[in-house]
Length: 166
Image (cartoon, rainbow, N blue to C red):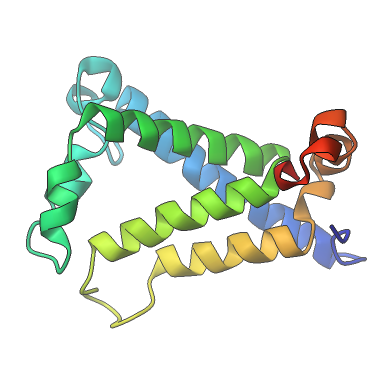
């Protein structure tokens, strides 16, 4: 994988990587503990709430609402969603496993985008699509190597044996 572009722009990509990682980490922590911004304490996962129920049940009137409302609150969906948020956040913040983080993060964002169709503020593009595009850029520029552990991660025997883990 190519190193991040030389010069100051590599720090911009690193900052974008860490910032998007924080978006995923905050979503995980808020849904886990219910810190009251997007998730009230009473609906926290640690208090028996479902991290997917609120968002997915709110899509009933949307184009694909029937599909997404059936997934809302399913324990396997909650576990998959929370594991995904935590894993993607960790990979982005540390700068490791960028290929998998970009792929899984992009898929998660595309599903969230699809759940909201039709969009209310723009017919095609919203923040989910923008984040997915940036995740691709982070991987293609090797953003995990600046202010991250990407170089060390890539040198591990596991990643050398399974390059998909880069």
